[in-house]
Amino acid sequence: MDAIACIQLVHAGRKVIKNDILNPFKKEIHRQNNDDTIECYSCTQIPYSDRFYTPKILSKKNISEIIIDYTHAAELAVAAGFNMIEIEAGLFEVLIF
Image (cartoon, rainbow, N blue to C red; front, side, top):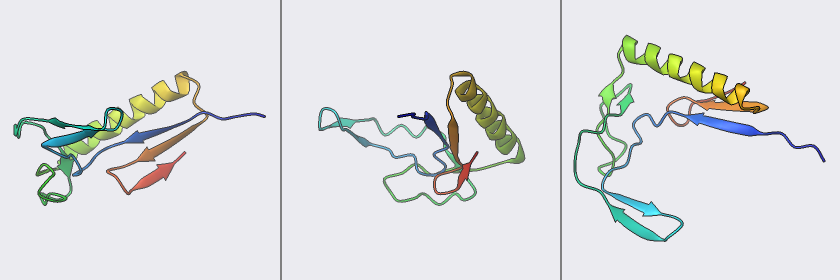
């Protein structure tokens, strides 16, 4: 049976969770500090919920940088031998090539 290798490239958008992170392998909660220096970007400054960081508004420069980053990641995936690339643009916006 032939199999194909697939990879998903994801941009978290405004869904960057803060504080408690569950480690699924150890079934324990890792407590992070409340440092708000983590940057996330979206088209809105409205957090997904109060458990998530407040995103910064995407500028044209940010959008260009994200496109460059996705392009580079896709090139690496092709070079690594992946047969399919799913690009998830800011969670819930999916492009498949």
